[in-house]
Image (cartoon, rainbow, N blue to C red; front, side, top):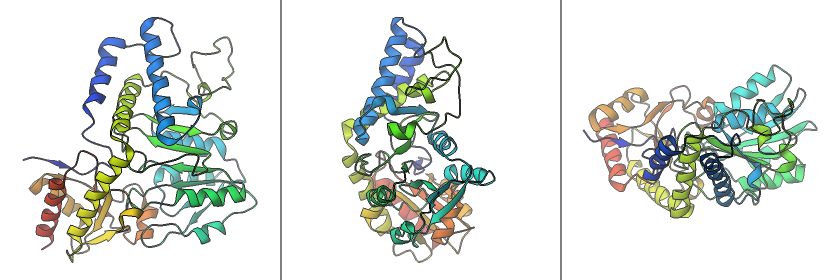
Length: 382
């Protein structure tokens, strides 16, 4: 049976062919790491890593490749910011739609004297900006918001949030896990101090690689969580202060870097606007196709301007896990069911504790994929 992959919010699949080609090239022909040696292969590897930083700068209108820090993924980058910046007595504002990659570190820090408030969101998962603006306190040190929900697909107004943060004099960090590669992002226009992105979702790269983009003044305030060899300043046992070495200890994930750099080349070639238009056209088709299925409830916004291609449905008459299982075994349609590591989002959307069945789209999905999913849902819920 042919399978239809609709779990791109977890990790994109398939990848552009050049991603596997470049990873294979690194493993079979290059093999060297960066910042450790001066022979040809090591120099080439270093240039690929720098090209990756430059591509991320171009994609997100960020000015300094030295302040693009490569990480082991988005969760690690978020932990590096949250735990590297906040101190006992500090207060942070998040939204009620955050992923556990934000909430679990904050709950850990809460035991150490860090406090947080969740800005309320409406029944579609969109933040109430008026309520948000009243959450600032004298000890508010940071605002960290998920740009797009991994549950309902709703998009927050990053530029409006950034204007409020600027007026309050508080740094603003954007978790772009579900929007990078899916929606045009402008670091400067949003007034960001930092942004985190995973390589393996909308940017179509491999797992185990990500990045954080940091304003210089914000980077100086972050304490490195990990210290060790950087291949630089090797005469000293003190962690380097300069970027990006300050946050890049240990041997880099070079296969991931090669694959991520190739994926960003593909994204640049297609263009984020074209990627979004394709995805949102499919999302509109999907939402319109299930609108008249009475057994299903759509989570998140119906309007295309307010969302990305993450579409969750709740089926109160059936167990969502059973529905997801039937979609795979009878129709070959691969989805994700459950709470998606975001219980707060499900509480906001009214789908806790039952969760939802999530369909998430990418550049490589087609109208035929969407129509097959609609047909299957109609048959399974009739």
